[in-house]
Length: 556
Image 1 (cartoon, rainbow, N blue to C red):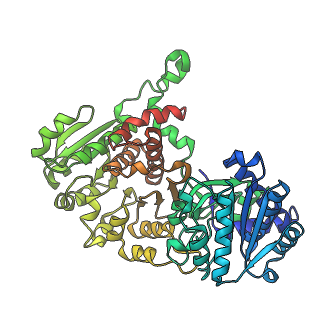
Image 2: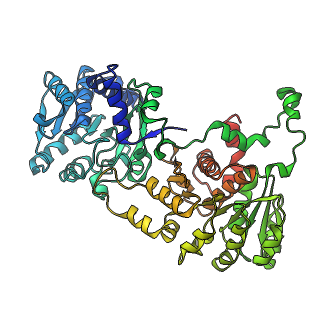
Image 3: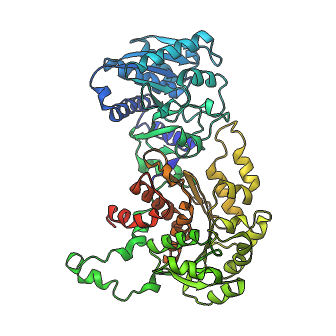
């Protein structure tokens, strides 16, 4: 997994490196500025071929110091560089002040009133950036980085009038490059300090150092950025781990599950010819049979309502469950039988019938919710949970308890996974959702990570809070972010039924014996990988069928 840090953790690592005598703050700032320039040339190689123009907007802290380094390096490269300082040079931190003075040996600094800009200053900055745009070059946003802890009154005016807030989504220059994180965002939560999109930069490229921060992949920061690059500034990762006690926080895991976990997922797909693998490898699987890989039961709704459950069932089967059965009311048998082949079918009219089916102990994973219907969910969920099996609750299985979520929480156990989207999350955890929706006035702001951890602690089971910034948390505090931002953006996942397939993926992995947290993390990651593999035009039915291609691409 990719390890993520909070701003406080990064500061602790940098300070420990400085205190050790291995590096100075000035050296770290120099490496950061050099990393930004390298990232710019990597992203737009044509800009390295000849001198261009840049506007560098420096803020009052060390982020501004990084900006002065960038300005000096671009000037040395032959560029025409215009530098603005949004702050008082006499109040710059010591290292930033040194780089401010180094820049003055090469060029001028245009001072801006802090925090309130005049109309003339706004016009001046806007004109400078517009001129850069005609020369296919960049505007460096070095205003406020990971240290921002409060809204800046004048920032809205500067960004709204000069950086246009959302211009990063245009494909033409000026290209906006943010140092560390787009200014205005909380680097721990990704939220905009002040609450409005007008208060934050939209960056074509964000360049951060040594480790990504959790906020890069959450909330508005993920939405407002197109590309993220992480540049090495020479901090030893092993020493950094020792400083932080081996990454104890929940923000330290992102995206891709451990390869050994994925290998468990696709083990049954590795039946290569004996001449490729050798007889001993093939013999390893000789005694296995379908029940070795688990039996998942997906509960379906009535006639005309079975499509969602069938999508879940197909996902569970494709991801590796040995057997998958759809349980539906009698009136839906014919409909489902006409649509199911490898997926089996059984009649489950009510709670008593479900209890009888669950007498078969080989059924070790359940999925309830997709297309189930609210009345049917209220009857079947308590029976399913009383069986103590690994269970995914999605959609109607969550909404059915919206009026009294505490009734559901009393039934849940640690082998459960809840998969709410934002609306379902708000119905189950209204106070947590309300806190998450409150404007972020100070940093670190309450984040989706915080909300999901709080929800998991209350529910007593794993919670997967869906979205482009999916967060998965367990009651013990373990937490992972599965981001579909930057190069993993897959907007075509916003299609009917994709969540039903995700529920099926999780259920299939639970049937295989994965822990709830592992199953949720792995399923979420593979869900996005399937979407990226297929591309635009995706519909939910395509997701399970894309899994074999994804597995092959992983050489697993």
